[in-house]
Amino acid sequence: MAVILWVIAVILVVSGIVSLFRGEPLWGAVLIIVGLLVGPGGVSVFT
Image (cartoon, rainbow, N blue to C red; front, side):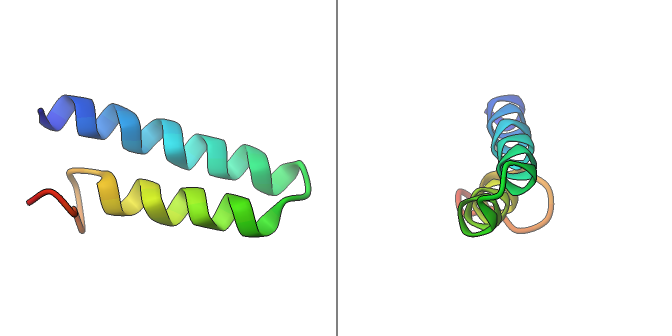
């Protein structure tokens, strides 16, 4: 389960960074924050 959450978190953070470079700072920030919340490291919603 931790590996799946880690992969989802990485995808969300990378998508957020790509959104920032495409000129969508709000959407990028939301994706990065959600990625950090979902990830098993640091703060996780599921633990």
